[in-house]
Length: 276
Image 1 (cartoon, rainbow, N blue to C red):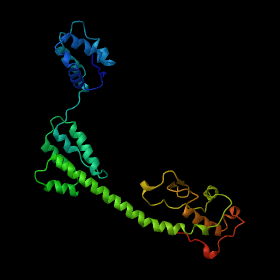
Image 2: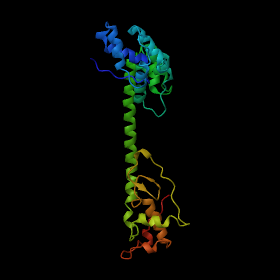
Image 3: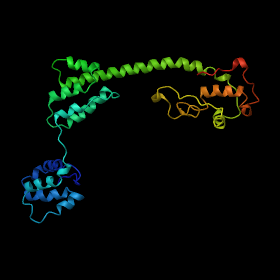
Image 4: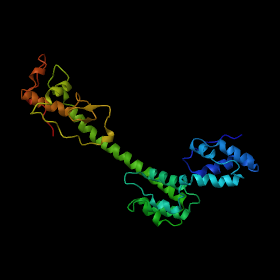
């Protein structure tokens, strides 16, 4: 006997009926068996409904096939037409690759989808300023398959451009970071970690927190937190801006209790200026 996926009364009854008939294809000529085995495929509320049927009220499987979907007609799936594809539009933050995947998923749900309508809908879902849209609208006798292929090429092109952009930004940032951190050894030494000093001073009326960092949040190290900037990316003890501000406070005489007396403080000419 075949194995059945149970129907619990909360899904499309027509779909379950088709599934049952296909599974029982070898027994379609045995009407009595088809009716009795059908009850095995029901669970929960659907099983309860089956037992409400009066004895001898169902004379054939064809009659059962009429009564069962009628009972659960409210769970029937709405059949979508090809025109539904015109509602699929590429989001501004969505990649071409993701748009193609989403379009394919929706198209697969439409039985007997019209290829010409699907082709037009796929093109119209793109922004008019996108180069792929111009290629599709100017292309002659393009099929949906060739449109997908063009979209995948554009996706690879977009990824290559983004990769080159990220690499260029990285090279641009590295020299400035090297210059900034080359002066770290000139800072005053303290007897406790500077993160602890921040916890002591941040509630003072004269204390000033810096503005939020302006950078690409996706590239920050989310395992590190800076209490001075109140954001991710680096630790408080490694924060250059906090060290610079702490140097200013030290020069103003606000951190003497934390000074390491065993080392010399930097001379005035060696004090690191506060960068904005």
